[in-house]
Image (cartoon, rainbow, N blue to C red; front, side, top):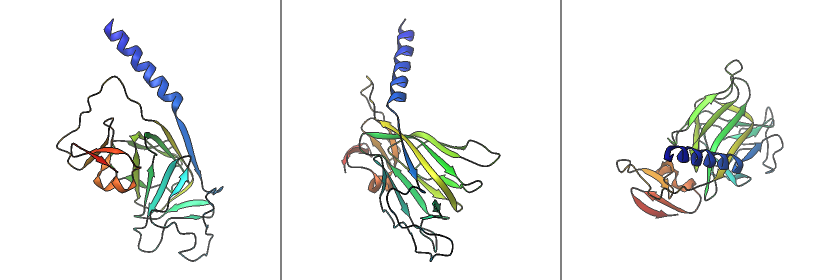
Length: 211
């Protein structure tokens, strides 16, 4: 009987999570943020997305960082160009977690590597045309680095409120001194992700940290 009750509670929990999910769509052709855009032949700085410039969609913030020798990420011909070695970070607001990121890329132009070590899974859905790619997991912030120049029509970020269960004890791996966790025990990355996190209370090296 106890096992049956546990199974029912778990099923109800997952059902409630599914209902609470929302999707933020970063549509680069629509460009609701009114970012300057570039077209073929423009100067390399035309339409550049400055480092840590916040692009916000439904509360989800996307920021970029230039590590390429020449190019910043930019909206180019109505698509987002993420150049080799540049990064993209997606950050949820306080008390919200990201559960999926769907990269609707141009065929054969999506080469990303997650660098936040959230434990999420990064896969391609259709190997015939190498599109779209998706990340699934549970994190307050997720950072990707382009291993080759990648081009996206849209990026869809699925998110939901953080939820707690009757289990109050948060278990943190004490050997991971660089790990950053929410109060609910959700791993969000290493210490280098702290500047990108929304304001709130986190656990760092087993101690509370207020940002």
